[in-house]
Amino acid sequence: MGQLDGKIAIITGAAQGMGASHARHFVAEGARVVLTDLQVEAGEALAKELGDPAVFVQQDVTSEQDWNTVVAAAIERFGRLDALVNNAAIHHTRSIEDETAEGFRSLFDVNVVGTWWGIKKAIAPLRRAGGGAIVNLSSIAGMRGIPGHGAYGASKWAVRGLTKVAAEELGPYNIRVNSVHPGGIEGTGMFTAPSDAAVAERMNRGIPLRRPGDVREVSGLVVYLVSDASTYITGHEHVVDGGAIVWG
Image (cartoon, rainbow, N blue to C red; front, side):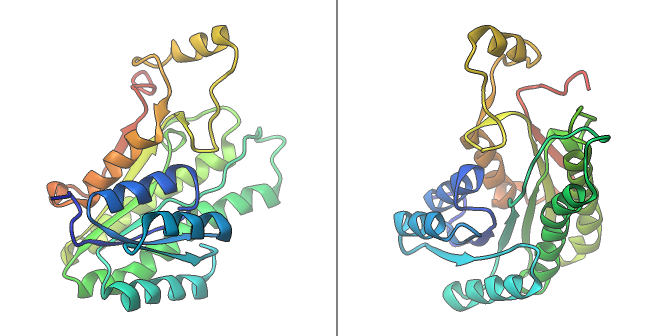
């Protein structure tokens, strides 16, 4: 028996990296999933790998029409919606001085507006299902100030705040909303461990567990927050960073 037996979920940004890991974990735990991404070939390949419990829908998370299509696909294919994982995000590092308005807005469009659309469009089907769970992927950059992360960090702080408001507003409908804040996680496309062993050792010295994380360690937390084992948890930040922000 899986932790997510019978649950229906939408996972955005699921064609690769952390999103693909979430998708594999959800299906392994008994869920049926709608996978979304702009990367059609990779998304369709993953859906084929996962078989009947998965369907892929191309999506731009900043598009209201695409969100309507994705939610409709979940209902038409699987009958209802129990969970949403707002995983899709983009990332770049740039000092505040060097950042551009275009770069700042692009991060907010995907990371914040995309998450807001997801929450907004999931409310009605989750309410019809009697409740459910929304998990918003933020970052430790949404917990502390990190140089070079002015735009990205601001977007992830916004996701953190949006999560808390959504948890308050949607709690009466038995819809739980939590944020997950990964640190440096290998296999995400947003983090690459240094190839130089000495540099890697110095970097890992700032992490109590002395290593970067793995996407599977984040996916396990996301599964838990959607599962019935966490039915009294909402509105909180869940940090998975090996202890990197212990002193933050």
